[in-house]
Amino acid sequence: MTRITTLFIGSIGVLTESSDLQRRAFNRAFRENGLDWHWGEGDYERLLRVPGGATRITAFAAERGDTVDAEALHADKVAAFERIVDEHGLTLRPGIAKLIAAARADGLRLGFVTATSLRQIELVAGALKDELSLDVFGYVGDRTRVTDSKPAPDIYLDALGALGAKPGEAIALEDSAESARAALAAGIETFVYPGKMHMRSDMPAGAIRVASPSDILRQNAPKAA
Image 1 (cartoon, rainbow, N blue to C red):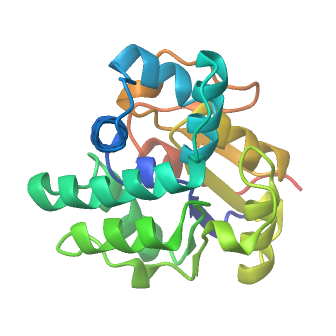
Image 2 (image 1 turned 30 degrees about the horizontal axis):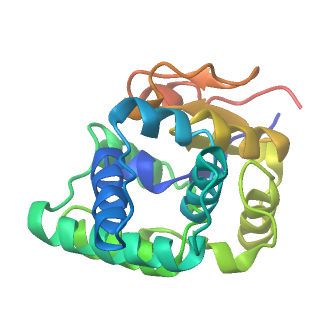
C-alpha cells in the first residue's frame, strides 16, 4: 500500500486570485511603453493558455505583426504588478489556509512548485505574510531551477527529487489546465482548483477538478501499490 506523503501547491494562482491584477499590470505596462495594446478579460483568459508572461507578450505581438522587446516589456509589467499589489493587496483563496493546516497536521511534506520568477514569488510572499509563510514549504521552485517551464514536467521532477518523494506518493493542486499538464506528465495525481479566468477551460484527462481545496485530502487514503 502506498500512502500520500507530499502535497504540491503548484502555482501562485492556487494561493491567491491575482489574474485580473496581472491583466491590469500588463495593460499599465503597455500604456507606459506607448503601445496601443489592451487586454480585456476575454483576451487575457485566452492568453493564459500560453504559460509565461514574456511568452504571452511574444505571442500577442506575433498576432498583431508587431515587434517588441518581450523581456523588457515583461519586466515593466512586473514592476506595475508590484505597484498594484501595494495598492490593493492580496489574500489567500478560500480553503487554502485550511488545506495547508490540515496537510501539516497529517505530516505531509509541502512543496510550492511554481516556475515563475523569484521576484514575483517574493512579492506574493510579502503580500500574504499575515496569512501564510513560505517557510511551511520544504521546496519553493522558481524558473531558474529548470530549463523547460510548465507544461513540461521539469519543475515537478525537480521538486520530487528535492523532497525525496516518488510520484505515487504525491498529489498536486493546480489552478489551470496548462499547469496541471506538468504535474500529470510527472506522474503525480493532480487536482485543479480553477482560478476565475480558468473556469471555462477544459482540463486535461486525468486531472480532477475540485470546488474546494479540502476535497483533495478526503482522498488521501492508502492506495494499492
